Image 1 (cartoon, rainbow, N blue to C red):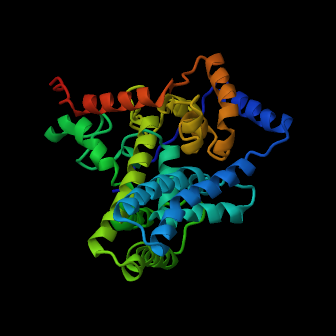
Image 2 (cartoon, rainbow, N blue to C red):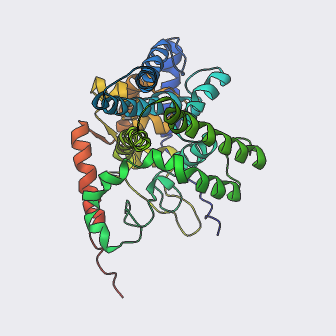
Image 3 (spheres, rainbow, N blue to C red):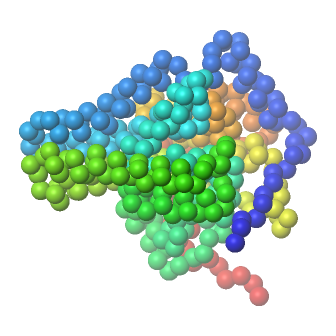
Length: 367
């Protein structure tokens, strides 16, 4: 069954986005800087890849005690999430560089994170960024029967415990990419003829998925089993720990931006129209957190500045701290919400409170 076609309102009598867009464009023009990444992003890229891959080479080339290998797999997970948030994310949004081949190269780093460029661009760039927090359209709100992220989702008895067990499942995000998610997504997206840009050739697309998975498993599982004098189950355990750390970090960061009580989850009218324009919809469905924390800003690749990212996804996260003042002031000027949590800790607490709320049995509807 095909999804309902949605359309956003084109009525913005106050001309919010036109004003905001002009002010942001003026900022870049007046300061003579590009909207894409700069040397700071290249330095960060080098650091993130080093955190991710250096431990792998150390384990593969040196005789290291088991406890140290365990610690290095945790470091790899931290680096893996860092590459995803800082390098892959900007690359696949086309904001890493003004050179398309550089964006493609950096976006392709998702293959060493166990993902797939086509699937990620459809789920994230098309479905999530276009239909943010709209039940049945934004797949980031879908977690099967296991978790309930929206009041519009079906409730099951086990959901009343989800604020306890959800954090255990969050760590499975990237390992699911490696095992099941990519196959299911490509089947679904190709059937619906979804794409970000030109629709890929089916044979080429499936071939790329198969080949990339074979190479991935060979590098991260088969090769260590051949090279290292370690029990096979220890290698699989290290692989799982790396993924679990990365998956937990990525899941929590993304959930804090949208799966919150303050983030609206509007439904379309029967004819598929949304109440607000796309830009105003982003303001109402997206939340910032810890924006003044330099460490959080640096490590999360600006994903704590989700308001700025959702309105200007083609601007590199390197600039979000500067343009956030423009976005906040313009939103306030037009009497529109600019939602943010002062600290990451407060945002995490709010997220799990929301999960507890969504886990409660909904009140019976009147007859």
